[in-house]
Length: 218
Ligand SMILES: C[S@@+](CC[C@H](N)C(=O)[O-])C[C@H]1O[C@@H](n2cnc3c(N)ncnc32)[C@H](O)[C@@H]1O
Image 1 (cartoon, rainbow, N blue to C red):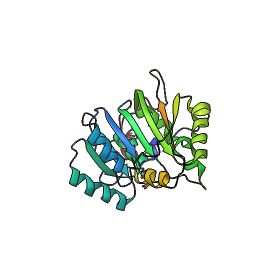
Image 2 (cartoon, helix red, strand yellow):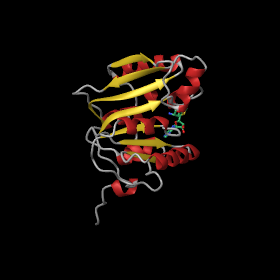
Image 3 (cartoon, rainbow, N blue to C red):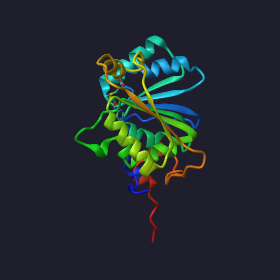
Image 4 (cartoon, rainbow, N blue to C red):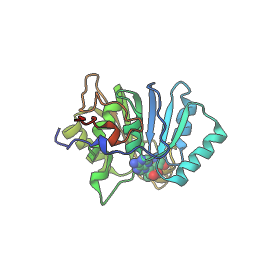
């Protein structure tokens, strides 16, 4: 792999961090106001979904709507997904990740999800045969992600065109109304896929200091 190794030990725990149990879950990253999270958890009562959103107002909107609808299998989280994933998730725990219409980061290509060293850590949390759904209205974003999947991550995927009447997220509705082409990649993790983080457990709120070996007292 030609991408530098993600420095998981540098991630401080998110504020008010709470550990989760090691049960199978689905995770949505950048869930916005939670339209997809609410729909998905209603349509899949047998699956548990954690929906992470960094922007406070959007998280509050998701939380309010969740209180109205009351899906017991949905947990909205207000956090930056990177430290939250490092501190909370176990290797091979996640059945499905959703990253729907991520910020395109036009001036910061290194911040796009498949260009980040963090993506390897994310892959380590995905269960064998699990999937990542990555949607975008920007053809170049999809094309770059496809190239990364071939060159760096060596992962199989399927590219799909989103139907013009799809309405899973607020951004999807806006883009389709404008007549834009929306596409998604369904990325699969093969059974024996390996990453450098497969044996790294969740940090569970521990700080870097707590992780260091005690020094010899002499
Ligand atoms: C363009 S919006 C799309 C929102 C929603 N998925 C939709 O399609 O309507 C991207 C969202 O990702 C969130 N986001 C970006 N980076 C994030 C991160 N590291 N952790 C959590 N949320 C993040 C932003 O706050 C923003 O709400």
